[in-house]
Image (tube, rainbow, N blue to C red; front, side):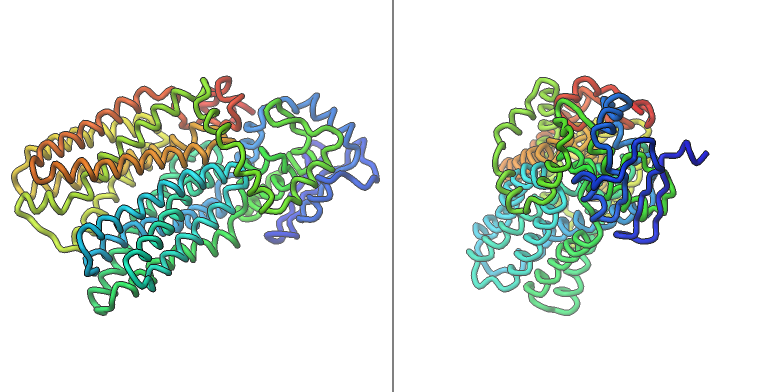
Length: 554
């Protein structure tokens, strides 16, 4: 039995004490080993790295031609879901909640400012402009220099400029600080969902992605609570509230730095196979998994694929060069090839996915933001008014049932049907809302609209991250989020022109865009539930229908 196992994992600690010791093989030697083996020893993953040329041939003959993504998914299946994924959901969720706090904070700060309506409008729009820029730039960079450093930098920018807003000497400076904070908010969105997707096995992936989205609701409730305590109960000025609102982002940055590793899927795509093995060992230690990890650093280094580039017998030297690059050098490389990335997003194998997900992001952002941000005006029109804090708590409470139901349905009926049904029902509710003439009906229908739309948002986050290959995943998320910002900003102009002339027409516009998004969801080419993640554009067409069960490709 011992001879059949490939090795044993000893988990005595989270770092250097994690050891994977392969059983001796017939061609084990006493050579110094390759760069991959040396790197593995440096990080505490002990592997047999001698006999490189023989091992390379063996790998090519036995399993070198297997899909790399299937091998990665197999590792996650062996390790399973445990403490690491729970921790990652909380840390990444905190990053998502920090975005919600900063976005919602401006709605409490604006009433406290003694400035003109025009200046308030500029201040409110500044953050959305920053979010648009941040999403695009961070998405492109994180596919080139890594998800983790971009996520940390985004949280840092969000927290620092959110804190700086508290000491802004004038409105112009405050606009600049809020724009920069928006860059951090927009930059974290692609990284949050890409990281959680790439930390999970196929089975149950939709449920845990949905748990991360729950934290937006938590952030909005926390923001309302902070505003109520600081400015409502303690009667402090808004700078105290702005400073406190920056704490979640800074705390998320610290926790990410110390707890979260880089995505193993990203590391593998970059040829950093020893680091990939180390991350798997770290995840196994967190999960207290005694599984036998079949792909150590040297074995990952042997994997080959036309789109990855085979490292060959000199892989040790090349791998050592890759892993010793400074972050600044990788950042410089990340600024190149942007146009190539954009062209890959419209590759024939991805064109339909890119087009319809873009339409969905625009329409759901237009419809949801268009209605929710004008909710107080709708209540006022119906003769029913809520206080500032009660309004936020009511909307946040309506998110809860939508989050629960969507998390249960995501892996059962699939992302596409969850998204299409959510947007279709929301569109129908918007039409009913146009004919509501009683305050109770208005409040009830708006809450139903919000709860149903949240399910659509959750499904869209899953679909967007799973539909694109690893090499483009955060770039695609950044681009899609940018189109979403354009939709939300467009809704403000359209609704601002209609709110004083025809509430019914405003609601018909909202419903119409949601129904267009419903149709676009039905036209998406692939259902991503229980599907293995793809790692490059070259394999997307050939493997889009792979695996309705986790072990199909293995």
